Length: 229
Image 1: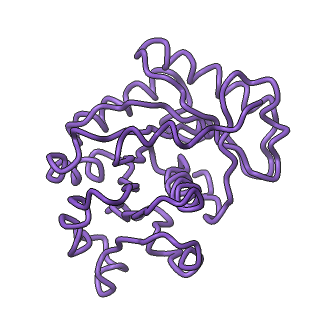
Image 2: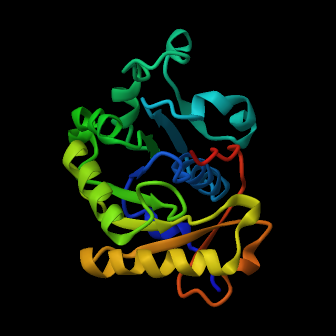
């Protein structure tokens, strides 16, 4: 079991974090920002999620302000509204070549499509990570995952570069649940020829990833779990 070396992502300045609602993409985006900041890099975390199923970065801003990275958030007066309002300085921030950018992107065609207008600002230097929790609706099988990736790519006009396994049932997660998720996502990886870059794991339960043939990415957990409907 080896911890993922975050420096492997730094060949690209922009990291787009995508995935279905409930996949854990916001948690991954936050943890990437924390780890890059801890490595001494200048980091800007963008809240680009226009879909409000549960929690967005703007909703937990107070938990993150002491971690040292910059947050690019929508205007305060619009944060409680489900309207397509991006941060007012988003274009200038995306043009900043001195920082690494992490974008938390909406988890459906509408959310992913909304960033297509900005793609010229980063499409020559980006990674797009698709986060998968196989215990969430719409990403429980290989076929469902393939469909969702296709939807996100068509909407954003960008290509997925990496897959991320985040299969969990929070405190009810078992090693068997993670292994089952890895098997499904590995089939997706082989069909699309897109690598599984890491396996997310609660930093307090790293033992659950023993024996799984992929680097682990320990997570600090900030977001309360979304109830399964």
